[in-house]
Length: 464
Ligand code: 0X9
Ligand code: ZN
Image 1 (cartoon, helix red, strand yellow):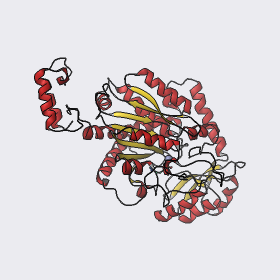
Image 2: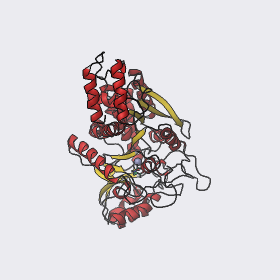
Image 3: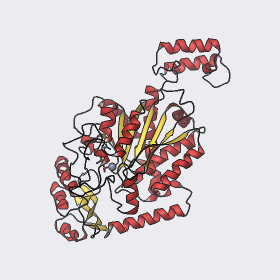
């Protein structure tokens, strides 16, 4: 049954955004129980906002005059707002007011692009010893795509320090992902020195953040169309339609097949070539320049899911067991916060087919532990008072990636810095210890003594 629904969804998705600009869509809630219901929604050029379709009550954008049609068809549409764009405008005014008021809690409401960039610079100014901002590329409209590196001192002397990349806002309308991602950065910065668990994670892992992968699309949702999804690639010459779905443009198994579209008007348009878009090329170049990258999480909304490879095939990946074990641990950590139950599984079988997505590229091409959230919600911006709980709820699960790579790849006891954990490290440590070299002072006491030696043995035995 779900399979049939998903098959029809592919058709429904192609008609999305077909609503004429002169007739602003209505935001409604309706029942989708069968594939026929989805087909009826598609027939009136309606668009479901939820990214996966289980039978149930869902939000959708529909032409206002389609309400009676869907009522007659038994979908029970309830109008949340007769003009979805007007509702979105009110939401934007509220968020911009909060900003203008100088609300001290940055996570009290959603933030436009400039405010996100300002916050990144504020973080860097607060801890210049930990935080570095750099540009990884420029969008179609020449906006900088900014990355932020957060890691403890002596990173240059530590070429094996494993890296974790957390990126968000590939899809322009998924505002909450930016807030949730920035909360992770804030936690690492604020907890360094004070919280031993955080200090350890920041010292042992290089954390990379790209909070807004799609700055043009994000800005556009703040100025024009709240429900825009893709980037802002200029209109194609034949169909005159804008934008590529960046989560279909990555270069692993990119091309025809299930889970993408080659029609430029589709919300899942894959683009003219793999990495044809400056935004996806920027992420690719960042990973190529970061050989020690071991894990990433691509944050999306909404559906409450923890996803991993594959997206292009229902086959299980060779590392499925590890992915699933990690995913279950993440699920458990999220559950412990307030009992919210995220689903866990491969993209293809948990949501639907996705070809050319981040998860497949990072795992299939770059060989790293690749995850993707669909965050909490019934739409793209849960009420602002829920931003912080959502950020707090997912934080321990996100930090698990850091624990995992630090334990598996980042050895403090890798004394000879060859990125391996073996007997040569024991020999190297003994030499330093006998010479009284300050590098042998593992307890940080200022002298080299027997406690340093036992600390080394302990770290070595724990494969740390
Ligand atoms: O269709 C998508 O790209 C994702 N759903 S969304 O509503 N956020 O657009 C599902 C794909 C999830 N997988 C990856 N992020 N790779
Ligand atoms: Zn998304």
